[in-house]
Image (cartoon, one colour):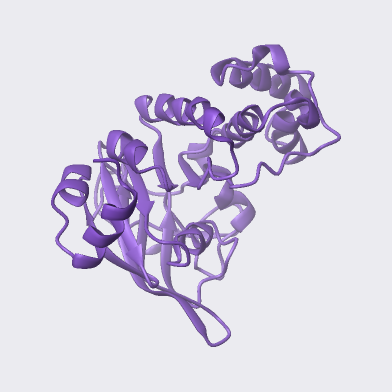
Amino acid sequence: MSKRSLIMAPETGTRINKRVQTNDGGTVRAPTDAPVTENSPGRKKVIVRDLYKSFGTLDVLKGISMEAHEGDVICIVGPSGSGKSTFLRCLNMLEKPTSGTVIVDGHEMTDKHVNLNKARRSIGMVFQQFNLFPHLTAKKNIMFAPVDLGVMHKREAEAKALELLDRVGLSDKADSHPWQLSGGQQQRVAIARSLAMNPDVMLFDEPTSALDPEMIGEVLNVIKELASTGMTMIIVTHEMNFAREIAKTVIFMEDGKILEQGSPADVFQNPKEERTRKFLSLIVDK
């Protein structure tokens, strides 16, 4: 099944603002200010409106709103505890928002009627920890989801896994188990696994935070290669120089809010907020 077939919308090029029923029983709602034609340049891939998330009495996200267009690379930076990872997990409903709207690739994730299993097929996510199945080889880790969900036959999934391993520079590790791989290699397998479902949007939650310094570069290079292909990506990172190099937009979060956002040049060289300036002065290599 093509990932595009999951989006049911008229092919007229007109703008719509209504909810439509999908064949799988879910609903999608195209944003009112974006064309619904699939090949339109700059189509909005992620729309977040007034997002709140609380854990009991602890307010973690406080009215987040943002957008990502097709091909955008957005890096989210900020101090620990500012809500960055929680925000990312709300995008694919690993954390259920308290209120607000999240639309990813045409699917309104916060709609109680949406089929999340279907909607998540267009979203890939790479975590801080690698989360590989220890009893499966690198190749079989990548094959698992497409085969288990019935998206690909075993032979097709195997060919895809080998293609992806080659893409991340691990064609010689197809039959290796996670314990036989370095941290950087495991994270590259995790990236390949996330790509196996042919996602339209990739989410990275501090993908290098668990790696030794000498392994960080190999993972960042894979992410840079993805960016060069036009993949839409939202990346939570503490690697400021990487964010400066790869991002179209940098978002600075503090205390559950977006305090500042703009181009890397704007945020890193001419931040408007004093809190942003103070944070960057402590961690960015001048």
